[in-house]
Length: 618
Image (cartoon, rainbow, N blue to C red):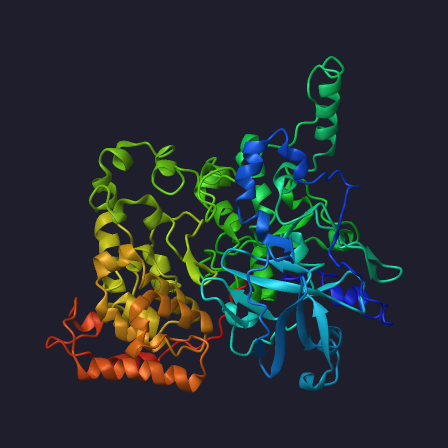
């Protein structure tokens, strides 16, 4: 059955029944460097490839996973206590080390698989050293060692938000359904190791249940993309010593840019994709790490997960029916990718990939550009598209195709064909499932469409008519509310959590504000300040900017439900007392002809909100 974890994937199933006696805490609990499978480490690349090494060294790929040192830790280990549910975690520094005082994570892990209820609040408290970090761009989380299972690393259920300079419970950093069970303990050695290290090998000894976890290197380094470098380094050293000994190099590393577009993209897809290890390879991974090497077929050892709308073959439909929840956590109902980190699945479903030769390296590079998104200088705009789509209607007569002015946001290929409909890390991300706006998807599936993510003040009916007139698309029936109210209002008031967070982000997006207006959305954003989902609240407050500082006090998206409702109510009271000069007026934007906010209509839409639980598996 399709599930987020393949058979044998739960590390607790591998080791807990076997290892029962406590063991002494090792002085260092980091995975050891593995030099037995051809990995040499990025330091060996630097002497010959200094420019490439330098550009990679600036990237967030390098700092994805690091030893916990004063240079790598960004969190405030200042003695404060952070509450996660009814459990308390104190983070502090002692000497040169970073520590956490916490409920015993080993006992908590055991309780997680126990058939008997356990009061976690009564577990003994322990001190554990923080030995490893994950993340360095948006937020950072931390790992402590198990005292029961040597080599096992377990997470603190906290993240440190770098921009906010604060700690929050880890689950509040992700869009998770209100009834989702909290994952207080996550083990690094079996799941995170796959994409947050290079050449990760859990090193399970099935006989003893012990772990001898090793990595080629922490973080995503040179050999993650170019393959193990031992033979290449040895050959080049031999050539330096005797140039005549090896007339031509035979052991050059893989260069993804020189592979065909499928194999090249699979190098990125080994981490930026939704897949499942084939059952026959799952335990092989546990024992020896991934058999995949750059340049190989990624799906020799992995099952390629596809949404049935993209691939309607019976086996794909059967996959969906067996576990629809897995798909809903990563795809919109129309089959486009919802969860961040699945860019390969989106690209692989697009015609630019299946019928053309578009690859990840068409737009991205690890060696240059802004580390924020690793785009090539030409990768952030239409230049990447017109290198293939060079017909006059896409170059010289762009308005004939886009019905927008040349150079405008509406004539930017990305905004129409790669809208920001993927969610991760408190923001919307461009879809890599390159498609055109569609009346069918607009009407049937509820995925926010490119047109209304700019024109948030317009209705879905308005978009449907334009797609009919401009491109001859079939008119699909809409509800009365979809004909009457703006898409932005519907998504933020009536939409489910994924629609709300995407709309909230766009309510602060510059291109949308320039064509949609701004202040008519303030009452909608204000209502999201008390949303059930923490990411929706934070994204809405970020979109409001300084306006989220009501009466000079900074909004706290992690405040109690009572305070959040108070904050939202004060904003609505302010609007009721003092009617502003609205930049949009009309029933569609819930402002009547006399400039009054249509509170009763907004309340009616809010009562009809789609309350389905939404979890996005970033």
